[in-house]
Image 1 (tube, helix red, strand yellow):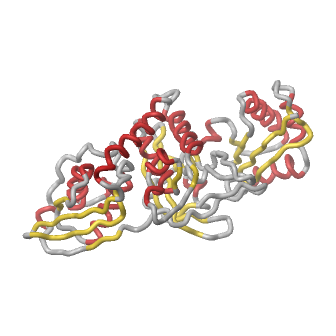
Image 2 (cartoon, one colour):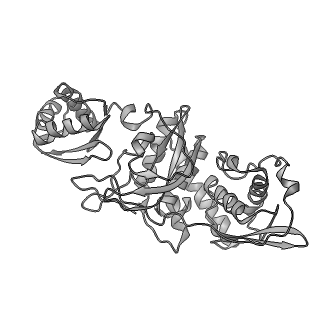
Image 3 (cartoon, helix red, strand yellow):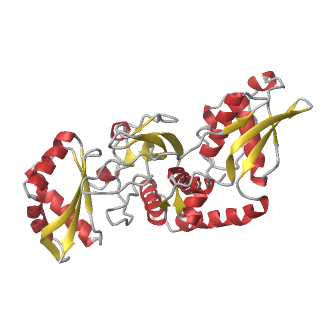
Length: 388
């Protein structure tokens, strides 16, 4: 669910109903013994090059995963698989949908049937087989537009930033639980409307094609008022370390209803995400901060006192000179954040910063007024200078 950015920037609203459970029809007949001790054949190269959840399955489940993925793109009525339990099918089907965001044409339901001691999986599709080639082409073209436009394709951090910004700039949040297209990469990249599942799967699809390892995560989000709901986001491996990324929560609305983008959830670690996200489908145990947006761009303050006003003025001037309208800064702890709020906002020292910034830019900057947003949950301050 979208969140609104007010003068007190709340951490975010819970995103409810982003991912529905897989519905399974199940009949158990054949034996699994022959599969349990047999290593699966070489994993198909269909789908994503980074199949994180496949690696978490047991051998029988891997066989089923591989059989389904090898055939699913031709949209067959059924696929023969080893005999598996309902719980195993749930893990296999969830892994398929999490790992492979190009399965936008696949629904939520998967049923098992048996015929002459052979087991078959029947999958629900949400588009007609005749429509698939055109839809696939549209998704491929949308993805290629992003990948071909990357400014530094060999720079993982810059590539991630541009993918993050593209999704936020070109997709608006929309949750229609009865229409699964809003929960797909197709919804986000082709239609320009998606729920959190669509945001996260679009990000993974683009990371896949850019050669960046990532995974889709599901779990629970908690709003500033304590309400909770299902949510999806990503883990991304940048320069050897995993970080959490949430494009949905970096795409809020301001008071006028216009989209803006922030970087509160761009490459955050366990401590940074703990207050808002829980019940992870997998805990990546992210501990690093060096690829965090604010650390990487010099907008991270471990502590704060008045000697930092020159640094803040330089950041503000640099943003204005680059044509940006805002500067966002993040603090390393509550003490630093509260001290900055008290000094800059409550005591009005931000106007001293504006005066110093005005000397460093040709932008006709007002030194009498500005808009600011506070986000105590993420220890962030956002300043929006006004121009004369």
